[in-house]
Every structure is written in C-alpha cells, then in structure tokens.
Image (cartoon, rainbow, N blue to C red):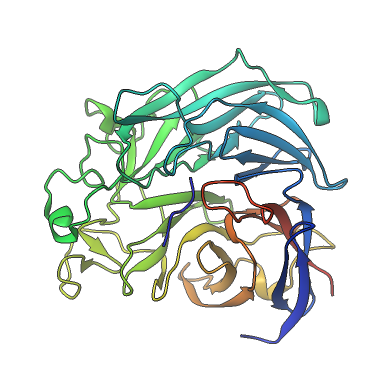
Length: 406
C-alpha cells in the first residue's frame, strides 16, 4: 500500500538502516538519527503507533503487527492478519483505544482476502489484546468488523489511515478515491465522481464509533445510507492522520495530483468540509483549466508544490514537556511533515495567533528510503518509518527516531 507517487546550518550524520544499506543524512546541528528496528526485525512497514508503556507498534503491509521496545531495540510479533496485498492494498493503519490497556482494543485498517470479482474490500476491524509488554498478543478469534466498503481492483489510492480521537471517542478513517480514469478532464467533470459523491465512501475521511455506530454529531448523521459516516470529502489519497491536543486540530497528510503544478497538502479537518478533489486543487484552482478558481471548497491548511515529485505521508505539530530530550524552543508547536518521494522530513513554524503554518525549511534530508509514517514519541523524539520496496519488503525498511543531543 505504497503512496504510489509518483538549508539552514546542517550537521552531516550517518544513518545505518540495515547491515546492507547506509544513507548520508543531513540534520540541523545538535540533532541525530537513531535506528530502533531495521529490516531484520520489521518488513514492509506502513504505520506506527505508541502504546501507553512507550512501546512502538508497527504494521507490515503483508499483515504483520510488531511490538518494538524502543529501549532495547527488540521486536516481538503481536499477531498477523490475512490481507489482500495486490496493487497498493494490504495492512496499513493502526490505532489503540484511548483507554488502552484498560480497554484492550487495537484497531487495524486492511483489505479482506474475500471480495467479489474485480473488487476489493477495505475493512477497519477491532482486535482484543491479551497479555502485556513483550507478551502482548492479538486474540485471533476476537476480530470485530467496525466498517467496510468496496472498491474497484483496477483503481488506485485506497487510503488506510486511522486515528482514535482521545476526546471525541471515535475513529477517523481515511479512504482513497480509487481512481482508474487517465482522462483528467473527463474524470474532473464526472458528476458521479467518487471523491465528491456523498453516497460513496471513497475519497473521504470517515468518522465512526468504536463499535461501528454512526456518531450523532457527524455532519450527515441524519441522512440515510453510507454518507452518515462521511466527515469530509474531496480527497485523493489521504494517507495519515494526527491529533494535536492544545489546538484540537486533526491534521491529514494527503497526496495531491501528479502534474508538476499540483500540490501535496496537510489539511486541517473541519466537519462537512469539501477539499475539492478532483474538481479543484490547491487554493480552489480548477483542475481542468489549471487557472480559473471555483468557490465552495476548503483550501489546504498547508501545501507545497509537487514540481519534480512529492508524496506527503505524515504530519504532526511538535509538542514536548520533557526536561531532557525535547527539541529546542524554535520547534515547539511547529509543523513537521514527511515526504515519501523526496525522502525527507521538513518543518514549518506555526503562527500562534493565526494558527497557520509558514514557509517550510529543510530538517532531515538524504534518506535512502522514503518515510511512510511520522509520530511523536513519549520521549520527545520524532519517530518515522522508512519503506524501501514500494509494494514489497526491502533492506532499507526501518523504524528510526530523530533525537536532540546538544
């Protein structure tokens, strides 16, 4: 389930992603990269989430879930899921119930191995976790389907990001638009386009109760049919979600269009908002004309031009109250975003009054493999996954972290 896309004073550092692959990376002075788990421990990784005990849980596209001890740099298998790995499908997102481990539930987003001919079935399901620490395991008999929907095997972009909102007590789920039309103008003018059609769950961010119910405050909760789950629409390949407690922002890292003047985006999710794809891109520019503007759509919170290739795969606002290990004051409250195609992580200051991100600057550059997930650790470090094999495992697959060591 690859994204399928397509300086200030810097310190030279060496990052070892595995015994076989080394990359020369650049970071601002005082920062370093540490590898926590290489390809000998995890393979084909796509998402990472932290349990309350500080362990990093990682999904592998082929259906694996690992628990990685960030102190000992060891990994144990938590369980496996039978998943369809054709095209850009497979196991992607994971999220813990906000009360974990008191409520021992783990949510996973993957593709069922049982689907009608020519179709795929995207599924979000819940598992019960037994045991603690390195003995934690998924009960293989405990799966409960939360929500699922069908798509066309011939199309691409399937989403798969998950967020268990700690205050709203619901799941946010990303779904790709599953496009299979190479004719851009025809695709944009199609009145039944999937990303715009409220009756189709593709090209959306869904908002779902932990038990699969429709939250009563969803924008279309009183409607009939699948649109009751729709929170936002007009998305192309919405990849990853994050929640920022101080602002209440839910941020979405999203892959934009394939043309050089298209944008990749970090969107701030607002209930009922339409982010425009494929009708518009960027700040309301019509996708077909590339110049005229259309009203009625929500502009990106942050965007950057695709130019020679881009693929935004993670975004977060940096926060840490640690007495040691926290990034310098310059970065507190700043946006960090990962780009798979550019093999980099960049940062941008966020204005406290307006809540808007400014111009970005280089932070981590020169990775051998592209980052596919970005998370803030409980230790004040920023963790990221690198994925070197597109739709298969690679010696460049790793879980690593950026640490402040002045």
